[in-house]
Image 1 (cartoon, rainbow, N blue to C red):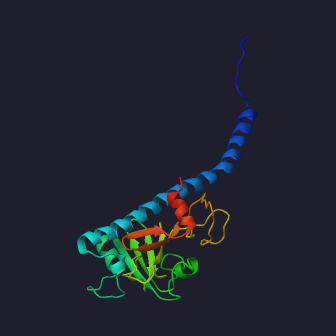
Image 2 (image 1 turned 120 degrees about the vertical axis):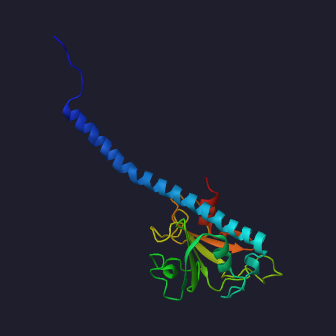
Image 3 (image 1 turned 60 degrees about the vertical axis):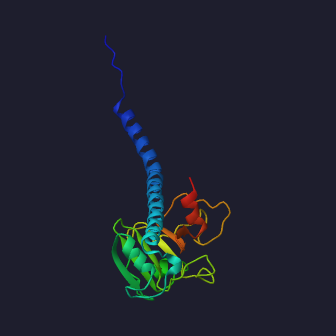
Length: 217
């Protein structure tokens, strides 16, 4: 008499059910981790692209953020001119107070309140990255012979994926305020908006959370 070995239909169904439950529990974490890694990579790329743009401008036109003025003519040394000349800009918008809604698919002024002002220039690049900063930004320098102090206008935001969500400013784990100072700040799930400061030939993260994403493992 020949014996057959195998699983019954009930055992197979139970096993598949267990696998489904485990997958349902782990998939959101896996997806968040993958998205976070993508945001982090795009953030590093954006910082590098902005820094390379101003460095190239120094090499070709001999001026950087410290030498810029507030102006709108072709002769003026402006931050907008650096970006337009040295980077792949697709579109530029100038937002006045209350007029930013829809520019990025969200309200720059409301969603990034406290990072930049209510009258901003927003640059869209061909890789989907967006850089927004106050229209009054100029003479951004740590050199006190060029600027009395680093202006509050020399801060901006990088949105690594533009209008696409989640459109949230990066925060330290356990914090509700993006600007909260926190020793040992860690960011488990990076988001897509990063506050930055720019001066001379430098673009750097301006909050603990933004620094944690850039320099963390």
